[in-house]
Length: 101
Image (cartoon, rainbow, N blue to C red):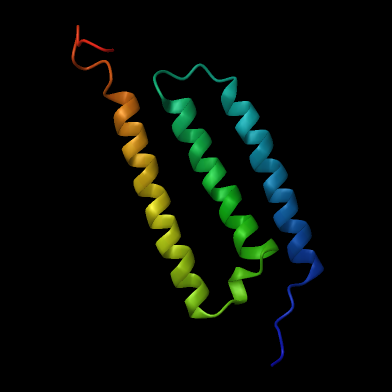
């Protein structure tokens, strides 16, 4: 079975995009944003960088459908874990004077 090859130019472009996103992450960290927006924007940029690495450097873009299903199910469970963790973290101060907190 012949494998599809990704051009060198594509790797260079993806690498440049990853570097730009890294610089963007550092730039956003210096912005005077209120609340949890630093975390939200940082996680969105990290998700973009992770998907670029997954698609191009790990050759998932040319993988069979089963690989895509496994990645989708795994991503779904990671999102659930993040939501549950952030729900616990962000709701801790909602009940004042709770014993044990």
